[in-house]
Length: 242
Image 1 (cartoon, rainbow, N blue to C red):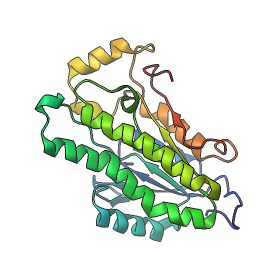
Image 2: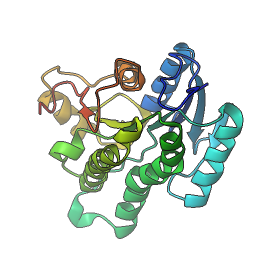
Image 3: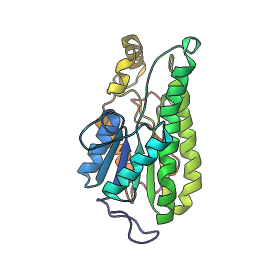
């Protein structure tokens, strides 16, 4: 639905929301939360599914085609949530260049491509919200996860930089850096790593996707999200305390 005049706020519901990686895990929980809020949601994901627009966020042409399809369904994008991600595990000394490049392509370049696809239109309309899913590992690092940590640190830096560029046009860009969450994304990580991580957490447990989704609703809300500019929210079970 979006805004009706330059600089005016959109309706509290009925916004056009695009969620990448929205077919499972945190992305799915966020997509469901926006739907429950009355927003019109399009899910972009590389996993086929009913109502899912296929996308490979690491490929420029695929991103362009997917966002064109999304706009055809719901119109200009009011809210973008970049949740598509890839997580593998390897000590740096054993890591192949292919593993490094694949992770950076999906987890960082993909965020760049998707942000670039919508930010100009948001600035023209004088309203928009971009929410990038980072990770607490982008702040503190993680054993066996140097590629993932580097990509997510890049997401935080990208978020801050784009926030500085776009805020004057009422386009607010922020990040969410969850701690370990019980999702299919962490299934490929070793049980030893997960057990050690649980022991580190002040809360003593991993989070659940539905415990992360409300942060996205907050950042996209009006007026609740109106003063968040370039921020990184941390639903992380106490793993990082900035």
